[in-house]
Image (cartoon, rainbow, N blue to C red):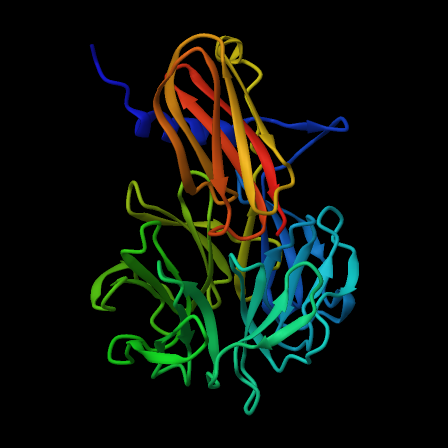
Length: 394
C-alpha cells in the first residue's frame, strides 16, 4: 500500500484553500494585496489572483501620510502604516481605509522606516534620524511608547529579524554602499557585525527561514536577494538578481515570494518551485513600492462532507492570550496532520501527525513564541482538509 504523502497533500490543500470563495454578509471576501506607493504617499489595493489594480485603499496623503515605509496588520483588523515623513504610526480602517488617527503615542519618531511586530507583542521601529536612530518599541495593544530598545543608534537602520535564541538582527542601509547586518542580544546590546559590507551594499529587509538555518537579505542597491548561513553569517547563494532597487517583501499561502522594485515600479512574484521571477503588479500609478501586505481568506471547504462527518474541531479560548486548547472529536478513525498556519501560509506549529482513533483528542499550544494576530488551524488528510481561525491577543 502506498504511504500517505502529507507534504504533497499539504501543498495541494493550501492551493485549494486560497481559491475558496467566502461570503460574509452577502459580500464575497477578496484575496487582495496592499502595496505602499512611497512617492505618491498612498496605499494601493490589488487583486491577488490577477495582480489587477482595484483602488487606492489609503488615498494620497490621507491623514497626513508621508512617504510610507511599512504596512502592518493590527490584531483588531485595522491597518497600521509607517511613514518616513511622519512622527507617529498611523492607523486606518482595515475594511474601508478611512483614517483613524495616530496609533503610537509618547514618543516622536524621527524618520521611521522598517517596522516589525514580534512575539513579545511589541512593535519595533527603526529610525533614520541623524541623532535619534535607536530602534524603539511600542505596545501593540495601545500604541504607547515602551522604550528605546537598542543601546546604540543604528544610522539608516531598516528591517528586523530574530534568530532561534531571540537575538535581534537589523539591516543597516548606512550610505547605500557600505551596508551590513548587525546583531543585538535580547537586551538590546550590540553583539557583532553579522554580515559585513564586503558582500552587502544597501540592505533593507531580512528574514529567517522556518528553522532559522538561513538568513535572507534584500539589498536595495544590488537589486538582489542573498542567502546567508543563519548561524555564522557566511554567504551561501544569491536567490534573486538582476533587478534595480528592490524593497519590501511578503509571502502568499502557496509560498511564493513578492518583492517591490523602486525603479521599475513593479511588484514581482518569485516561485521557489520553478525558480522564476515574474512581474505581477504593474498598474494603478504605483511609484516606488516598498512594503507589501497580503490578505487571504482561509475557511473550511463546504464540499468535504465525508471529512466533516469524520471529525469536528474547535478551539478554546478564542481569542487566546497564553495557551489555547484544540479539541478534535473523531467519529471514524482517520490519518492526517493537524497544524497551525500564519496568514502568510507558513506552518508555525505541528500538533499531530498520524492516525487518530475514535474519541476525543485534546492538543494544547503554548503561544509564547507567536506574535499577536490571526492564525489558522488546519487538519489535512488524504480526503481533504478542515480549517478554522483563532485570534491571539496577549
